[in-house]
Image (cartoon, rainbow, N blue to C red):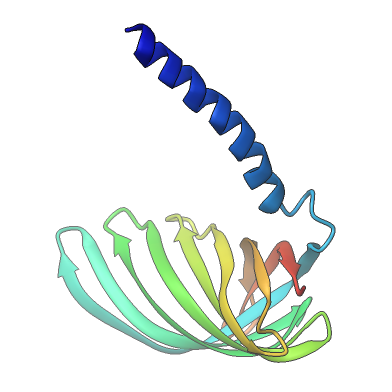
Length: 169
């Protein structure tokens, strides 16, 4: 029993030495000066919406839309999506945004994964994360949130505010 206690204490001390150095190497965006704030407007028009199978109380769907990004991210995007809507009206989807443009003045392309959560009364928002990038953006990292803000008067374009952090080392 005494031997087991000594081993556990040794492991705890080792973890105390290793974990702080790991934390310093993977500092949070709030502590790392290479990270900057990202903010702007994302707008989209629907290209195609296809209702798939109805399974239980879930209506599955997929399609694509065409996006425009302004602010920190400036450019256009092809945005395929898939998801499902519950019988209660709640909706969940993933949009894989194929972005072409500039981020903080640097040109390139990026793949951004955007998660959509919507409630039955139309409140919608979620998270976004840069999955990979090419060209001048090849080292781009970023993540954040977005919130739906409404539609154009003709109902053809939807708008959302995005915010978060990014870095281009």
